[in-house]
Length: 110
Image (cartoon, rainbow, N blue to C red):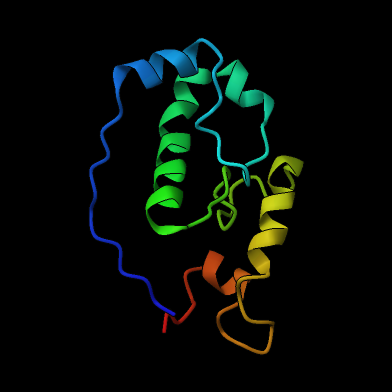
């Protein structure tokens, strides 16, 4: 299935950002594992968690913190769990739409 996503602008309240910086992680959706980076780099991760939470509330979408199809740091264990979950969403190796094909930019999106 091909999803076409049009540009969307999400606006957060300053109070949400301030609360996040103080350690309030209520924006963190239930399906996202709370990682130490959320506390170690709170300003950096607020935006991505805000967007994941917003898409989940508006459209029921779930996402992963790490960009699991990225070929960057293939041996980094931080990405292993998300990559494994992501593989379940793609057809098996008898199809051109495997995770490896997608990582190499060779997949057919239809």
